[in-house]
Image (cartoon, rainbow, N blue to C red; front, top):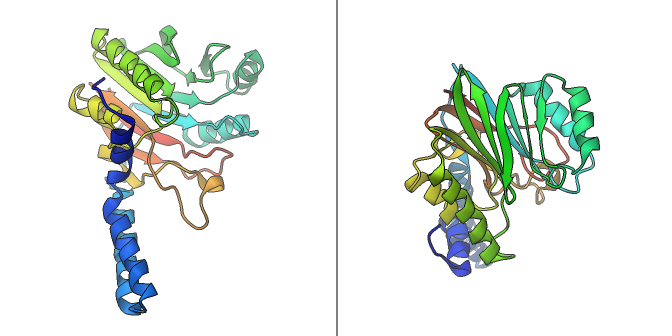
Length: 282
């Protein structure tokens, strides 16, 4: 990955919201100085900018797709993970379900295998990242904490990277190593159809996601084909006051695949993330 710095990534994280913040604090200043109508007007402009940046305008009534993929960060302290996975599968029946922050060990796997015998549960007992699929799995393993799975779809190989990325503000060197391993493996792979998905812990403006698009020719389900409200964090049970999700840090990127639409799922779960769904055509 390109070299960067902690300060640079903080700037990239917030720069998309600077127009909103400027207008908002301008509105507060006007209200303090008792310029009521100007202040209220600026507040409305600030809210409008926020919703514009948080909304996907790819409105599709019917989707002709042959593959449905969902990524869902379950939250490590979530005590209703099984119920949340059950809600997602019963309501949308994904071909591939990518899970982050699940539970380690075989008890979690056995419970899901019993509930969903049509799905394979691909995991490592020492990792919290896993994949469930109704399709044929050819290869699976981990590159550090990045799950790498090759699935066969209509006699074609589909390479999937599934992960919960480290937070750059906790350990910047670890964050850079993590994404460098991802990009190195993508460069070495000969598979033409690729999905990179999960909890990126950064917004679309941050360097790793910019590199995926600009240097590796990936497209984002939400960022390019989003339909409806596309912010993913924090989830409904963890929002701040009356505010909904504030940022979009979960995504499904594809290369060599025709994306149709991406959207967040309005499911009442115990997670602090909203699941992301993508319909695509191989």
